[in-house]
Length: 295
Ligand code: MN
Image (cartoon, rainbow, N blue to C red; front, side, top):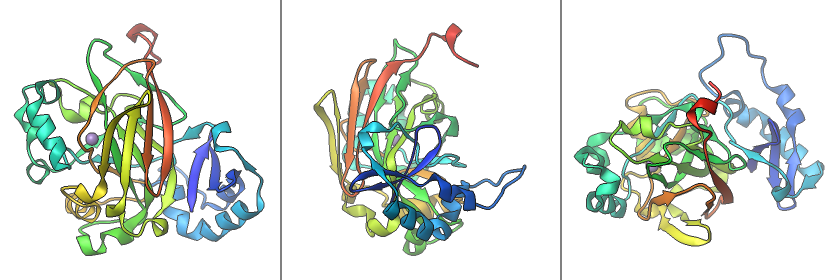
């Protein structure tokens, strides 16, 4: 099943005919009060809602996908976990290009040594919102990645059990300001984490190592790769992450980008597609100058 969020918090089921508004099913979610749980309520309850969602999807009216504004399919992730260099050819590219590693040798180390990092959840947007570049005199790069959404709590799970903890998959863009600061700081700028176009539930993708994917900018191909070439596979990433902290429903793992990263500038249009998931188009704008930013 394909589940999206759109037009200001509506819940949608994506069918062959388009997006069906299934928001009324949200009324069956358990009521939550302060202090709120660390997980995303919808993702945590997806198994209970599944039959209601499927019934609503089969009976409602569909509208064209192009006519809705897609938001992040996960509204309230507790963590955005991300893998640094996790494709071998991207590692070579980082080592070879000073403008990527910026003299920081740690950026070119293998994932086995560096482990994972976190991105601020406030950086998360959906494909219907623009990426807003800050630091206009510096380079911001696109990174297309398979994004894994956790469905069941995972702590110290083995790679063999890891996929049982996955709710589904989406396309992730791990946008990155290049420069000398800490990785998590540069990648946590508002709008620098894009998730979309929808969540494809895990039953539709039994093996996440089987997906080809591509990214283009203004129609020019930039990245083209396959998840079989991940250094640490999806199950291994979940095992690694959960050996340090509990993964909660709605937590998102950005699994790392392949070779071909490159800069984007305001006015660019990014198109990203993944086998088994779909495709999304995201526009790039300049953020408002600092004195106009809403604080
Ligand atoms: Mn990345």
